[in-house]
Image (cartoon, rainbow, N blue to C red):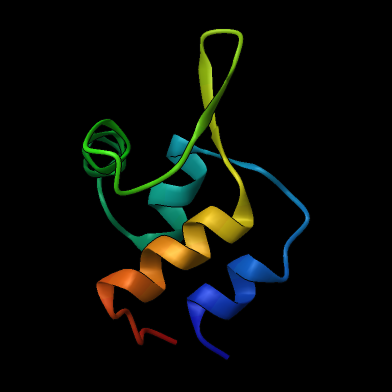
Length: 67
């Protein structure tokens, strides 16, 4: 099962730091993709959250096949 599939099946909205840790990328990379409009996120107070379906779609759009 790919990471995108695992994210899609989750019912947990991810913080930027959580998603960065899962994908083994820097959290600023996640922020850059959100700011550029490539990754959909929403605010909870001052914090950003990413829905699992948005994270999975972003990975699939990037052509990620990491398992």
